[in-house]
Image 1: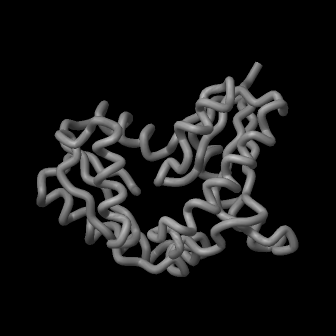
Image 2: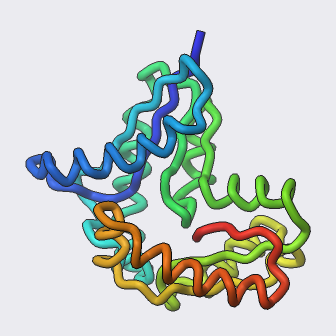
Length: 195
């Protein structure tokens, strides 16, 4: 018998914006379907209130409200029979509080990505979307005890709108990522993790 996994993307989408919800569902779940074990069910949840633009992420004041909405959404799934919960956001928002509140495994994609990267190389590069969040990811790497393994944290300097638009057409985002990845590799990175 397969597992049931809940995935929460901490982005708010108006409940009436069915088309945008469908695009996000298609993009996020399509990629998860490629790597899941046969028989595993994945349910994606988006917030009804909170961030509507990832461009707000660099501002701590907006994260306070968004993390509250995320925490409440996670708690609302506690009795729904899921085997695990994945926080589908590179910043691993509220990872520890949600882990403390639920009795199922809770996975943060950034932490999991860094730990997986360690199985592939000794030096890691992190590529994020906004230069203002480079210090945040540098701090998070330290919290995870991996400062000596991460040799570079670089930014593509993309706007929140550009980040959202790459769900429809990722060509420009891939080109920017490749350019920044080259800088990380020049700094000694053997493996890259998106942040």
